[in-house]
Length: 159
Image 1 (cartoon, rainbow, N blue to C red):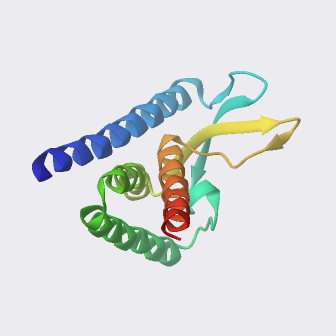
Image 2: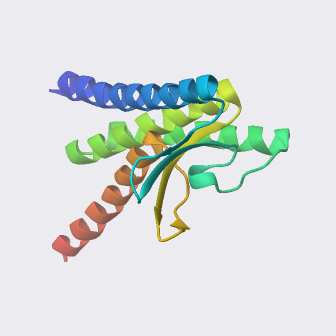
């Protein structure tokens, strides 16, 4: 049973990393061949390429190498903590930690390889734009929010 759960978690992590890589390579290929990425999918969704040297959703962008490297090291440490938590978690939580880790590894790969993360999904409504993000960010966000809500409801049921 433990081996089966380990394989499932690994497959989730790998699938999310792979999906993230494919989506980013697709956008980077468009940028390389077209010179830029500016695709209107519909009135709420655009695809544009933004290089994020900060953390999630473009927060804490910086040009300073030392600060960038310290944040990258912090992200590596957080990933190691997530791996530890993954091994300690229960079944449903293991899936959520795997989702977070898959997305985080995808963005960490980009930070190391490109020195920035390519973000490209632009959601907007009536001229108001959300932060530009990528596929990895989607899985990280879903995993974190679902973990938070599952803990809140778990505590409520225990009372």
